[in-house]
Length: 320
Ligand code: R5P
Image (cartoon, rainbow, N blue to C red):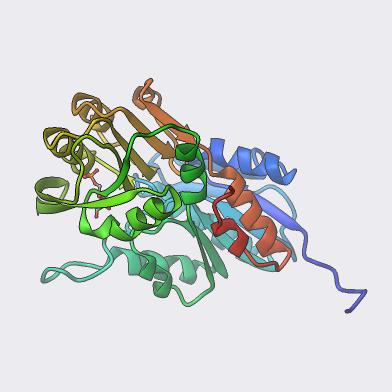
């Protein structure tokens, strides 16, 4: 052990896409984030960033979900570039929601692979590593030729559902893609599993074809990585209710909640919508049925572990 070893001091920065989450993370780490960078727009919308503190030789973490509009991505790239040019020792992009993750393969002729392009952009800007959560597909980790710490919201969400009383709980995957997530939840909640056979005739349009599994007379918990238009979840809630489900709850890590998503779910007669704060919830989306769980603790602990060169595996466990 070298007694003279000195760890580069941590510097926490945030873009403007989810300042409440970044502030929570900062508080948990005993850091400040609000005034660490100046971010402004030119009259035409072009973004300007400046790091307000010495970044030379520091271990820089930049919190920014790459949500729509795409300015959030550009802002993150500019912050990474500013940190690199300010001689940071290491730059970690902390991306609570990885936008463009849905475009992860060439499933039709002449389409782009947005998730790979995003990975290329972050690495080209100078990110040395990435901390993310519940990617649309776990394989997205392989799009990066830098280390990726892929975190899960499950410990937070499962702890919440364990505190509730259910009658004969079934965890339901609203489509084949979310089966792995549903299986994980069902194991941790001692529940059975059902799978919805979903068809997507066009982007953001979904149709339920079949429900595979027993749901009649049971409480159902739908789990997915994200709720965008809520078309997938609302169709699933309706289908489960038609098949005799008692209560239907919907849980997702990333609350994109575009347009009338919340209204759509409430009209479908969902009992509760449980999401995390990887994406900032707009005022108009807040309602009694929407419960937001914070994942700031998971991110703060991951940043601490990465900074101290410690394993992050403990963050995957659901506290009993
Ligand atoms: C699909 O593969 C995803 O896991 C989500 O089910 C989907 O992106 C949610 O989109 P929406 O809420 O618009 O149906």
